[in-house]
Length: 247
Ligand code: BTN
Image (tube, rainbow, N blue to C red):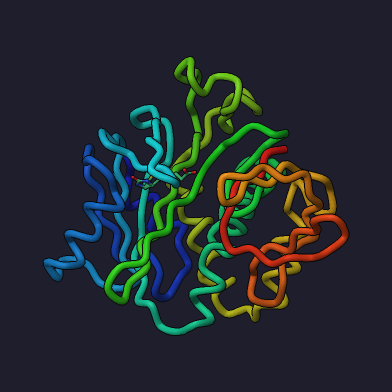
């Protein structure tokens, strides 16, 4: 059960998530919120949260597995206003999650490019941003009170509970994430890039970079002014907007 009044009492945004829909179960919140938007049932800034996803989608066509009522599984929708939002949205989504977790659990999580939420090289959450017909759909999954994980992800996943041994209330956590997100929307790209780099767990280190069916040993040199990754391959810096990093 997700208590919307408790969420709203912690929310201090003007636009983001002032309208939130809660449904107990759905296939994928990204898909459902888009259907709602098409039916004029939700507008820019609106959010949808569920306790259980039956067909959760991850990046690159992967499945997203989460335990019912223990994780935060939600999406929100934003009008695609300008080029700047295009560059900002992925970065500020990641930073807002780091901020929210810090505020509620005093835990320092980090980001793995492009936007995995990590704690000591284990994944705690992920973000799937889809761009459709003038809108961004931002879908976020965070392992909050999950006790155990499916065998396939057991060694790679963690939750706030598995780190702190304490239960975390999902309602204020979600509100803190949206509070930070709306605040970050007002910041310029150079501030956002600086903040993102400060919470990245592989900045200026050598990583395995997967791109175009190749795996290259390269240095992750941070983000450029548009938020794209700067990867140094044989001392030559190249700019990438997609790829996978293996630590
Ligand atoms: C990733 O692969 O790291 C991204 C995972 C994103 C999962 C979230 S859960 C809420 C929203 N609905 C989905 O179907 N996926 C995203």
